Amino acid sequence: MARAFLFVLDSFGIGGAADAERYGDTGSNTFGHIARACAEGRADREGLRKGPLFVPNMLSLGLGHAAKTATGFSIDSGGEAHLASAFHGAAQEISSGKDTPSGHWEIAALPVRFDWGYFPDTVPAFPAELTEAIIREGEVPGILGNRHAPGTEIIERFGEEHIRTGKPICYTSVDSVLQIAAHEVHFGLERLYEFCKVVRRLVDPLNIGRVIARPFIGETAASFERTHNRRDYSVPPPEPTLLDRLTARGSRVIAVGKIGDIFAHRGISEVRKAAGNMAMFDKALGAMADAGDGDLVFANFVDFDTEFGHRRDVAGYAAALEAFDRRLPEALARLRQGDLLILTADHGNDPTWHGTDHTRERIPVIGTGPGFGGDIGLRTTFADIGETVAEHLGLARGRHGTSFYESIGGHA
Ligand SMILES: O=P(O)(O)O[C@H]1O[C@H](CO)[C@@H](O)[C@H]1O
Ligand SMILES: [Mn+2]
Ligand SMILES: [Mn+2]
Image (tube, rainbow, N blue to C red; front, top):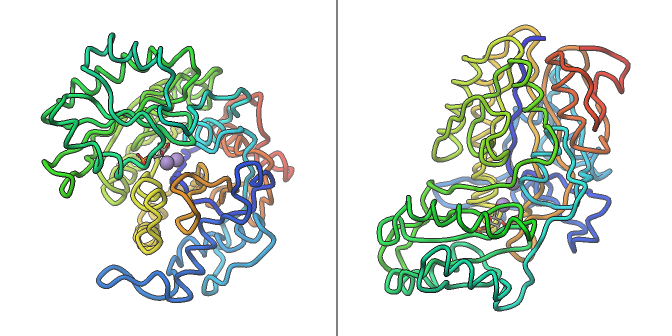
């Protein structure tokens, strides 16, 4: 039984999604395009990084093989020494959304089989009745934005007016979200959270996946900066997830980063948060040390997505991967006999792609654990990850997905 550790590198897709065309994402490949840009010297940045992508530890777990499984093509990622105890594969998503909750819920063995509500890419983006209700029930003088936009650009554009008028900045994207940017001091952080709860209730009938508080600081357009006090208000998953199944039988689920928010705090025993991938890695290591037999540590590393993918910052994304990879031996060293560690992602966010949204891609599934090794192939749903953790931790079979153990004829 031992313990299980699930690390999600948020947005680290590896291309090849069979349905990418439906999303206008045919050919997008977060890992592949970053590796290529690095190899061609297009991801050098003074004082940050230089040259080919250097991720030897993920390659030794089989990241290069996983990429080939996803797309059929090898990525020239500088050779790899394959660890004997490691496994590698790729997974296709069956949920229709290429968003964070869809990806994480499916990883937790609950594919999303309904359609989320979305706001159109028009100005205004929100229906007039909704805007009126937000203003009335949220007790604000009006709202700014009301369109699709990248978060950093919209606060640059409307931040000063927001400070002057007290109107919160409401915006959305191709995801099922209503995001609210407001100044931590002038508007107030707690007030923003309370406002988001009101909006959460108002968008429930529209089936909107998340309302997200996006606090920022600074006094002028040139100096506005988003803080790490972001908070996501998700709808609860419609069926029990792996997390509910574990906590119901008395195991602990330690959520590192925004995992708690993504599951609307259902099936979570403890939340550990930190600002930035490296501080998050420290939290994940601490959770690994504290986890007991039958427990799950579920960690999300959000910077890849928020700081680099959406910002289309190739060098920044590459440097973040390299920094994560350098820390990986510390996690491997904390594994005890029989533990299972899986590194994966929830969707793509190719920093070389057009626009600033997520990209529909397959995800890597690499790691190390007992009972199976080598190639786990192309998984037809992310739910196989959750079912593998379920079997490993001694739960009864769930309704979605097939564990790696089962498909290769073994048992945890
Ligand atoms: O541009 P920012 O505000 O980072 O928004 C991004 O973050 C949202 C939630 O992950 C996505 O829907 C995307 O629009
Ligand atoms: Mn995500
Ligand atoms: Mn995102």
